[in-house]
Length: 558
Image 1 (cartoon, rainbow, N blue to C red):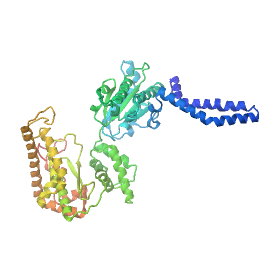
Image 2 (cartoon, one colour):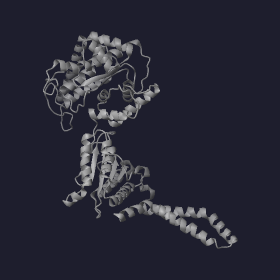
Image 3 (cartoon, rainbow, N blue to C red):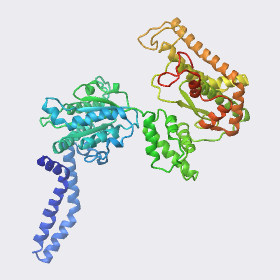
Image 4 (tube, rainbow, N blue to C red):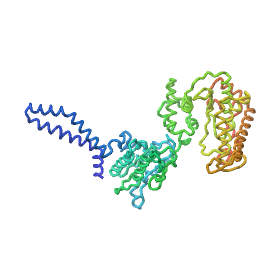
């Protein structure tokens, strides 16, 4: 172990040691020798050497530079030092907020690294690679650092894009250099972790028949990575490669994913409600915020947000509070931050009174359909202020994570999308261009239900969008008619509800034209005063409860 550490020290600091020896040989020794010469001779020798020194240095640099480029590839295969993190990593699993399932799988990896002697004793093999798959900003890099820190082994971090270069063979040379460093650390410390972010850059499926040869360099880089993962050296160094990708794992080459290379898959997904609340608390602890701020509501409003997006929301809210000269961040600033990130900066347009009223009726139609009928979504805000190219918005998010929406939920999505169209049609007997995106969304959902999910009225089941299915023109016409019928039926339901509650629509529009924006509390208070409590409250009051204390729903109720 001592010799390996000495060897590692020499490989890291050999240049400085040689420079020190060079100074001793070329400066101190000649100075000592010339001290015994006559003054005139000494001055002559010094003058000649100083005058010829620049030209000699230039010639030497040119010669050594070309020799290095020809023999070893020179600086083309060198990594940027800022991209390599070796040695101590101070991230612990306790520092990783959320990611409960991913941390459990990662902890197994830590135990396998720590118990490598026991695994070897029974004839097993230490895992070679772990692939982390998930959306960007969910903590894959942080989790990899935590694995290295908990296992107490060195950590080398690179990006897949660093292996891509215009010069042929550079990618493979960089892979060899990376693993050469990793072997030195593994020999000195018993193990080493190599983390490759964006591994899909060099790990995507190889193109073996490329007419223009553009994929040859990527193929050679990946082939070198495959060889290194196989561990063909006799030393038996314990190197674990952790790859991270935001892309679907199907884009990675099969040879890379086979057993013996990337042995484990860890899915790093978006946080759930409890984890989002903890993440909000963590980032809010870094700023000054109002103690009355309801973090639970923020977590519910941020369904589908990643930890990076939550951090961005908190930072943006702090900037908004600073611009307003507020002493602390409140819920209003947090809400404005979410809208600014998702919809853009608020800007005023010189709308005519007719356009402004049409926008108010349009958004009121959306709101009532969500508030009164949607089984999974809540309305967190309604606004007729212009942001991001839209004249108004109803901010609606699920009350909790929905991973597989059922028929009733999809019906509700279509009804809500058509609510604005229906409200404009009832009030003005015509609609404007603002309904185009709503109609496109409603048609897309209905088309998916009929063509792919087997939810059409005819009962036909199958994915009729598959290239393997050859549908006749008559069959396609039949399915398209079902899509139109499904959309028309939901539109009729939307219109019926709005006509029944039209007085409520008029009162909401009048309130909205004055206030322009209403948050969840204001919406709930407005509706409750008119005998319309939130959907969840009505269901609990009207439905019998099951053993878990939740309201029973029957299929088709919404």
